Length: 105
Image (cartoon, rainbow, N blue to C red; front, side, top):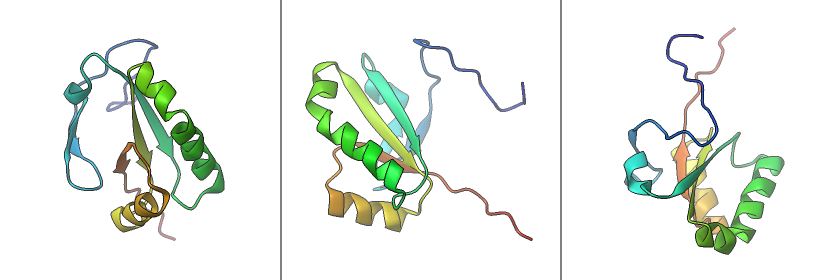
C-alpha cells in the first residue's frame, strides 16, 4: 500500500480529522460522535450525475435523519462554485471542496 493511503473497512471507526467546510466552519469527525457518517465524493457541481446523486440524498433527508446518518459531500470544485450551487439548490448537507492539481503539458 502506498504511503499516505489508508485501507477502509466497513463499520470501522474513522480516523480523526480537522478541516473547514466551504463556509469556513470547523469540521471534524468528532462532531459526529454516535452518528454514522455518509462521506460522498463527487466530481463537480455541474456534473449531471453528481447533481442527480445530491437530489437523491435530499429526497432521503428525513430518512437519513431518522437513522442518525450525517452526510458530508466533497466536491472537486472551487468554493465560489460550490457556494453558488448550494445557495441555488438549497442543499441541507455539509459540503467540502478539494483542489486537484491540473496536469500541465
